[in-house]
Length: 352
Image (tube, rainbow, N blue to C red; front, side, top):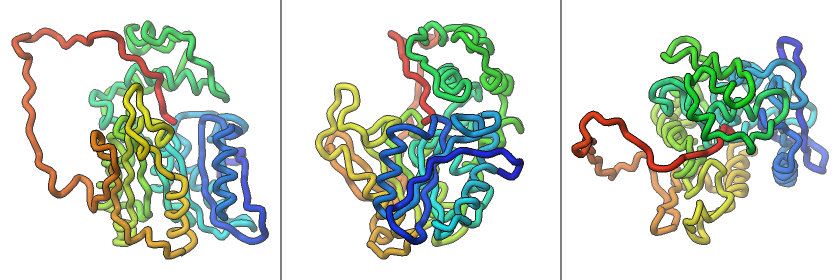
């Protein structure tokens, strides 16, 4: 990196001579995993160098991990380093979801010259879009615990429901048995001040001149971000090429996309799981290898219609034929009594 810090990456190359386009994923969840091995060999078999990199301060990479704060510059430097390698064509795409998705957007704002396309899954929105008060949701402290230190921490035996009921929010990390500077710094900024600016990207689509494949599920806890990003890029990307280069896939999935036809006890049928890996390779072939495989002429939006349990192609989002309905919420006679939940709600925080 430009400041002398060394980041560690596993590099999967095709078993052939020559130069190949590069697909880069940068993760805080440790690069040396079965999932990384699976995707590394998959992309290498299809003629891509796949690079899975530990972000700064995580896994085998040097430096201090400060969520999101260094990832834009580090992403730029990583892309430009990869473009200079003798096995690289100089064309680089980024890939990944959740934390790995948001840092793609932050990196794109740095405008690395050799970044040609992005594949982003289940990407969180800006602060104050999904956290309407600005205060991080209590489950975020679970993510801070999981990423405390250099490797993933085991959190399943912590009584998270008890932790989430702890007040004040500022010391919720203590209730979970650790001290988190990152949690406390976020809690100390309850308004949209300059502290949050390095995490924001959704007001800057006009600066991102790239084709993007957006993927999420209707039940993803970060679902808001993906359709917003697709619509924002179609509307505001600076070139016609980039505006036409947006694709959106929304399936019947949670935060882990395309892993199962079932969500809880609901079965969405045999069409729920698709060949997403194959689609991504076609998309990369079109943008990084210049292969005219027809994907550029296909409708830009694919939606899974729940209930009917089938896929449908569309030409825009939101749909032009949408009939908007206003809903007026009232207390139903409960006056000013506070809303109360019935039964516990628990989910471990999921940024990746």
